[in-house]
Length: 113
Image 1 (cartoon, rainbow, N blue to C red):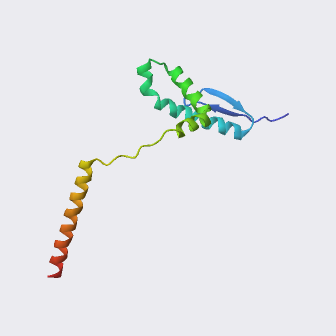
Image 2: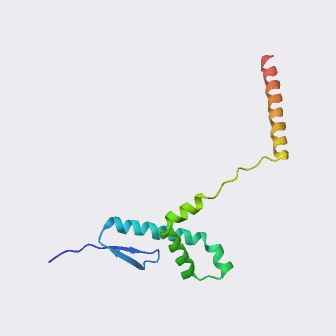
Image 3: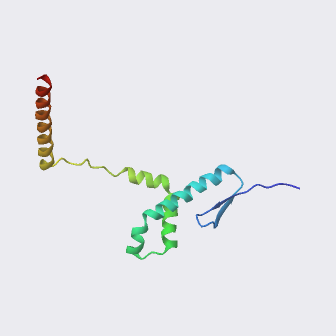
């Protein structure tokens, strides 16, 4: 008699997705499936807009998860813009700094008396 150990990866609904004999492979596949489920949550706003069904959204999510290296490279090209300081905000900052300095001087004079 022999014993065979299998690792079964299931989705969040408990449906069997794949079987593995090596634990590391099962865990790697599971991490991709978890990422796909998270991505599908990000795509929910598009689901109504593009009239996609759940299977289509999950297929797109799964594809993006399995292509994670390419997706990461594509996302690294996005340049983040630093928030600009508008003159109105800058003026408020200067005014509040001046007020704080005045209050500090008044407090120092009062404590010296």
